[in-house]
Length: 204
Image (cartoon, rainbow, N blue to C red; front, side, top):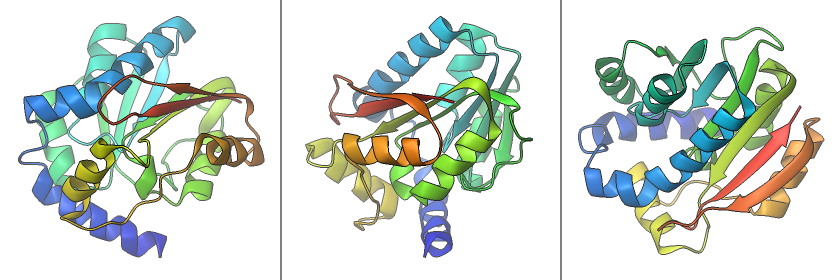
């Protein structure tokens, strides 16, 4: 099921990539959580950062430009999205890969982030994979849209061609996913914004 969902979503996003960077959509739906993630990465001093479900690469590029870490990797399954991302920045290493099978060695990454994409993943497998690639003390930050927000309905429509796929876990469910994968110090923070998005932060 996860593989078929991933294929469906990546196919839709190949088409959505043409309008995904629309400024109003970015400002209302994506920028609030991205600003919070950037602030936390800056405070942590993370140097090897992976953005999973990077889309057209706006956040990955901001990380490279504003934080100048040692390495930034943008990962996505949509070739259409990655084509836009590659045109946006050569400072990020773009990779076509699923969240559940990242092309990184064990304990080789300082921070794994994912915003506005986690609802499409095989969530237990993705969180376990994030834990695998993170170095001791590394951070996982996952932004999840509030399942009862108006913004969620539009994002689902945009992201699935009018469908209703996607699982939006609650903060308690996110805490369980993280602790079962071996993370500690799991916290959840509400981010002010149109989608009512929350950010789960966990340390390895």
